[in-house]
Length: 83
Image (cartoon, rainbow, N blue to C red):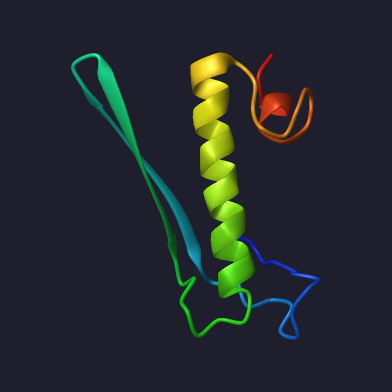
């Protein structure tokens, strides 16, 4: 992963060297997304906040796919990537 600089933890670059993986597979009319953040472990200071953040992000992505709008609102967050 690119270098990071988290502002809410003592070790501001604890994400540096981790990997964010989106594994997308098709099965007939269905699509499955498996998301993994390798290196985001319970021992890492940001684990709780970052796990919650990724969970919100995935729920918002699902909402965007299903309804065309993410939970973050128009032109914010994931909606900003949809033309």
